[in-house]
Length: 124
Image (cartoon, rainbow, N blue to C red; front, top):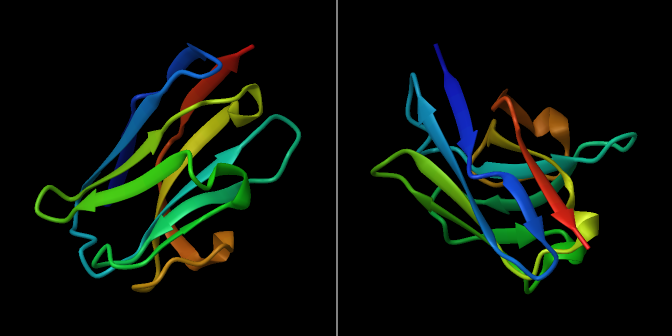
């Protein structure tokens, strides 16, 4: 059974950093793009960062450009999201997802495996 498990969330202050990790099991995702989404209360789930199967292409939401960095280690079947200079508006549940293809898309339907989510709360 395919499983994605996120870790690394928590409660931090504005300006702090966090590193989220996503470990995949059940099958490898080396041929799939991976994405990090977030969903704040009452809002839609949106793509924060995506990375192609090789890591050669990365995309970010405008709101996190310059602050967040997505990376992957295909040998470990893991994906990471380094979040720096966190802001209160970054507060959300963060989800790791495996895309259907090799390039990340911004649409939820482009992903067919999801983690359970990890809460990130940034206080001002």
